[in-house]
Length: 124
Image 1 (tube, rainbow, N blue to C red):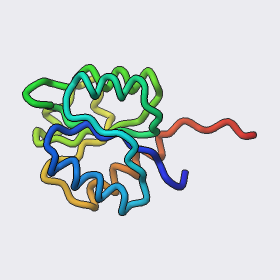
Image 2: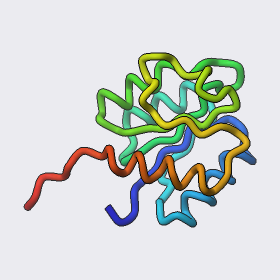
Image 3: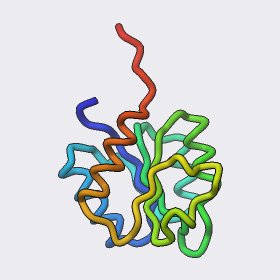
Image 4: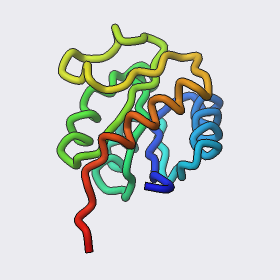
């Protein structure tokens, strides 16, 4: 996959912008972003994207419902959180966790892991 399409779920605008900048520098295309649970659920359910980067806490609300939506759609995801791995439910412990503040290298590693988990496209 040359340019994965990304959904960003992050309530802090500065962090979302930094994440988007790093992802675009790494060859990804950010196609949707959400800063609250309701918008995130709508976009996770309906938008056309390949991978997602999720904050765990959106304006004080835990975003624990989002991974289930993404798993049903077979969309690999990574968590981007200040809580580290302790903020991730055990059911999603295999998802990459990028700890805030993050580096371009950490985002690159997570992106490569997620790309490797994409479902195979049927050949024409």
